[in-house]
Image (cartoon, rainbow, N blue to C red; front, side):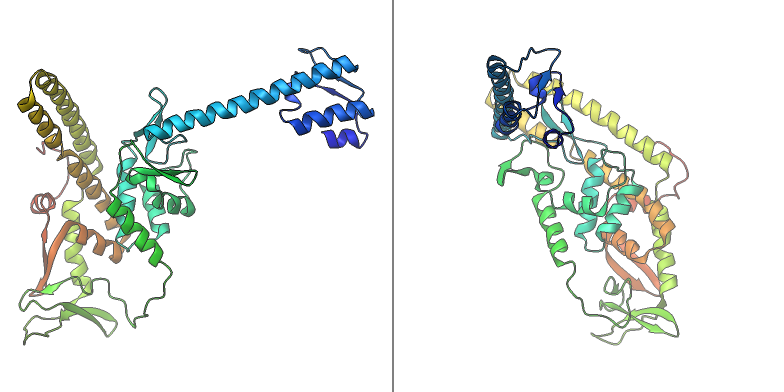
Length: 388
């Protein structure tokens, strides 16, 4: 605006108040200078009287100084508030994805809806089997959007995977602070993600053929690793027979994948089951919290022996609820996995839910972990029943 006045396009200014024109010494001084040189002939304000006289210019200069003082004082108050929050271990800015700003307590709270998916994104990337683009797609499929209600970009995914905030610390003005917010992941998982990210882009030895399940299984007869080879356009898995002569036969990849898909089908939870089971878990958690609160209140009236019981109770609490919630989310993802037909994702899923992979008599078998074993041995998922 001042440049246009200097160019002769106007000779006066209409404004609500002088503080709308200048909040720093440079702009205020320039307006006074233009008044002195006649570039500006008059200023009009509905809330401030001004006359282009020495007295008027003096009062205008005071008004500019007051607005400068207001800005400086506001800036110092904001910095003071930041310092107070930092001393308490509270992030002074906008909460990262997976957290919420609590406007009542001025603290950072866990977003219970989004945080499980953020944790899962870290876990998937740490396996080394998922790219940033694949994590972006996982979050989009899970309904995780940005604060502007848009799908996350790849760069946004990379930023939050590198954010220390998620394991309990944060950086502000290049200084590290221990946060009081609840971590979503462990430091160990965060370090694993950074290692995978640092290794991305390094050249790998190019193989003649890629086999999705090579190195996954051991032979059920002799214990040797199961390897793979390509014959007549098909992938076959066989025992390496490095220890002794072995009678285990070749198995085509299509047959192996079909057996794996059968297992995944058994542990895949329908949406209705997932909703009802999560609702039941929320009820259990609410009741457990009430029971915990009542018990703690009773124990607080006792001395040292009872205080130890309080600590033991708080530690034992509801540790089973979150692992159960995690398993339910993963079981829900199994349905999506079946529809995609991606062998790499099948491999990652099986490694997460089981161990001791065996191929014997052309049959693929392994030991599912607790919980997954119950799903695999039960009837195929069709409708929600009393699951407890």
